[in-house]
Length: 416
Image (cartoon, rainbow, N blue to C red; front, side, top):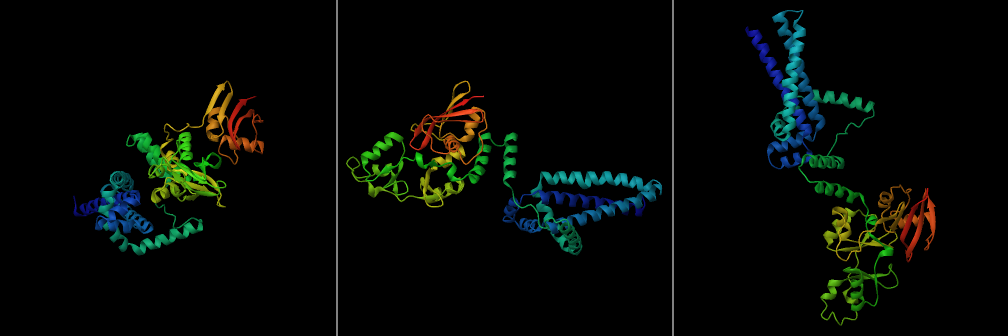
């Protein structure tokens, strides 16, 4: 082997290693999560340099691509010269192309990128200082090509600064589903992750106890009246009103009566009333849950934009949205759709409209309602009375009973 051949081979080896270094660096630096980078930055100087590097993705990518393409072009040129000198002008370029394609694919692309994809943190920490220093050296060239790229993007009316930042909701949902399939988390854990996002998108109006279903106590408030309400409902908190629900005087807690010096003979419990906590009906379930936790109260009054009472919501209502319905021995049970004959069902007016659709296997038209009772009132265009019936899309709906102004029970029959 001549000295010239040895030099060519040494250059080819250095170019191949450099190509692998830059290819692996690109995969690792792009693949590592930004949250992980922030944590590494707090742990070591290398982590700080890594954070500094990935915070400028255009500079980082320009440096890596310029350097990688430079060594690849150099290796192709040197290989051509080497093989022409060894086997002649006719076959030298073809052999050089075949050999360098295989070498660069294996050692300059596939192998380093596979390693970097499996160990992005370790790889990124090791290469960050070198890539940063190289970006300083190649800054003029990188800026030149970045300017050309930016101009092309503007001509195409694309966002020049449109780098993805952070992890999206879909990313987390997909990761949770993938982790469940891989056995890293249980199905219940994945469902809780999905439910957390659902809480952020659901308003408190959708989970509250509506105005017509609120159990209230009038003034003057007595111990006997409170005991009777507890016996009938099993509730531990009650709104206390004067002239109506919009004239709310406060919230009484059963445990406050138990702390009374003489609970058996207490006649006026007005001093036990607590100031109500109000939340707007548009507030999300997640924000409401966080506020109730931070302020340490278990019941909130839901109000509309005009300050009128729309309903009440408890911690239990909010947590049920996260982990499923929570019931104790006092709960009347979840409103249901019950089939009593072929194509005949009985439904509670409080049943969610989606549950009705599943129960009768029929899609109810969309509208400004969320319950069966709301659907019936919308269909009639007024508050119905017992016995009223209406046909809608091949189904007949008959009002079986009313609870004051609320539709209580409905019979649904398929008539086509």
